Length: 189
Image 1 (cartoon, rainbow, N blue to C red):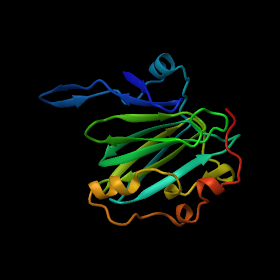
Image 2 (image 1 turned 60 degrees about the vertical axis):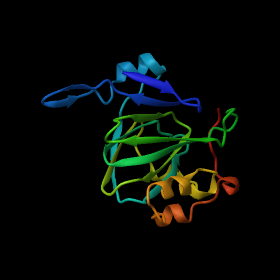
Image 3 (image 1 turned 180 degrees about the vertical axis):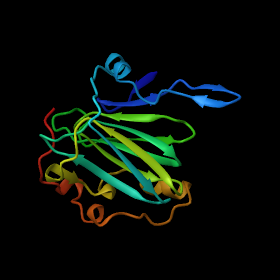
Image 4 (image 1 turned 135 degrees about the vertical axis):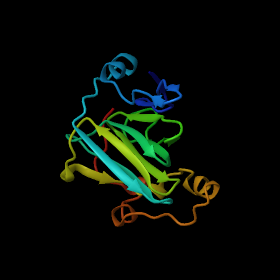
């Protein structure tokens, strides 16, 4: 297994070793002992979430504030996404910065997001299925969102390169506060 640290501390791109033969392929999509050994985090799965999105669906930026913060391990089962991590840890040298990754059924890569990292993605294909392993259960009281278009994320460029016109967003994401106007608690670093 191979974890590569991203520009944002606490974000890792995971590329599995794939074993292929005439029957198909096999790979380990996640192992807790490898995560501990390679990134130093003991990630114990407390909840597994799945989403199905049409092409052009934009989800996020989502996070849970303390004491319900979640670490996430995000994978794509079918289709493809442009996945974005946003550093929401006040005091972090990369606070407010973001980094994007292309995750797909074809490349089989996953993204590990430490607690304090916001998460968003744009579905690039119809019937894109995304799975999230979370290290803490969902708590609606501590759920928060930041408007995904309020950061300088290159959503429109990615959309145009993938023949996506308008974004499809939930009402929750459409009315979420902009990043520079968000007044709720974020995370200490």
